[in-house]
Amino acid sequence: MPSLKDLRNRIASVKATQKITKAMQMVAAAKLRRAQEAAEAARPYSERMGSVLANITQAIGGGGDAPALMTGTGKDNVHLLVVCTAERGLCGGFNSQIARLARDHIRRLLADGKQVKIICVGKKGFDILRRDYASMILDRVDLREVKTLGFVNADAIAKKVIHLFNEGAFDICTLFYSQFKSVISQVPTAQQIIPAGVASAPAAAVDGGNAVYEYEPEPGEILSDLIPRNISVQVFRALLENAAGEMGAKMSAMDNATRNAGEMINKLSITYNRQRQAQITKELIEIISGAEAL
Amino acid sequence: MAEAFKFELVSPERLLVSEQVESVVIPGAEGEMTVMAHHAPVMTTIKPGVVTVKTASGGEERYVVFGGFADIVPAGCTLLAESAVAVKDVDRADLARRIQEAKEDAADAKDDQARSKAEQFLSQLTTLEGAILPA
Image (cartoon, rainbow over the protein chains, first blue to last red):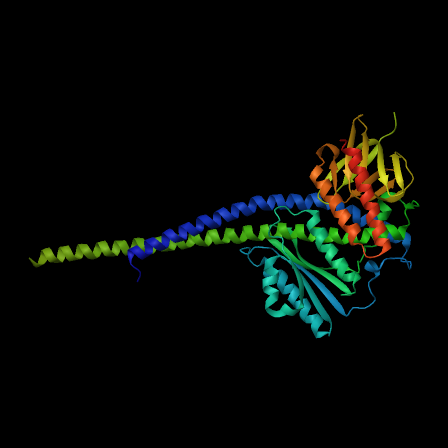
């Protein structure tokens, strides 16, 4: 049975922890709002990009001059996985969910006899995947220093991937990230970015009608410029979704922690009071029985 | 009074402009072009340069863009810029950094094609610097 002093110390320490988790929750809430705004602000660009892409692919009509980034190498022997996770922990199952999805994917590919290469974005995913697949990790991108995610960050990652592709280091590239559904729900997602699967044409019909476009320069040339950019945009979107998801997960994790700490404090104070009462009663009995003996 | 049409300037980070305008001057890859209402559908890449927007209310705004795409249809014009800032907010140091990077790219280029591309980009950047930052 812990002494009264032990209990008092314990309660004090749990209270301190509760204060910290509460503060973290509030910080996460503020950051979440900002991350959500950033994700929403980036949406128009990727939407327009999608419709332009659909439009132009239609114009080319899958002809021979589509760039390799779109058609792929025609093989699927070597897979590159870009696993995007958070830089920090304390956000519930957020990182491990993404890592688990990636790991399942890797296992399946290995079972099929494919070769797997990994690029980790974010420290946590790297830490998890390093345990099993250290030899496959080509590179890791550290975004720890980055305060606000900019397009440049995503662009740098995309350039790296495209560079590897041009060297023939892989055939298929898949991006792993967590889709931000709501504050309490993030869905780990795998998205193939090379060869780029372009959503077919409905978007084109919306704005241009069936108008005949003029292209300056040639469609093929525009496309070969557009596809790498589209990859950057996809990466950027994944990073933003991740940032929002991380904050959402962190917020609910910290909310839980705060509530648990509150429960623990209640329980401990009941024990504390009961014990104090017991001690008082004991002392009284001692005094009374002492007086009676006289 | 020319007819107004919808113009949107979008960068990956946000939507910069979305309003009714009279005309827009776009630094297209194959020369500058002015877009007005009912323009024939054109899709073009753009080079680093200044986009001049004449709004329907009569104002004029200028933005610096660093490469991207323009999608022009009779009903409107969408400009997807890789990065875009209003001319008055241009960061001199940032521009200088980009030029420095372009120079390095040109120096590092492996084959002639890449080099000429990098040099072209560099010259576009320096022209841009001269155009928006007198002195």
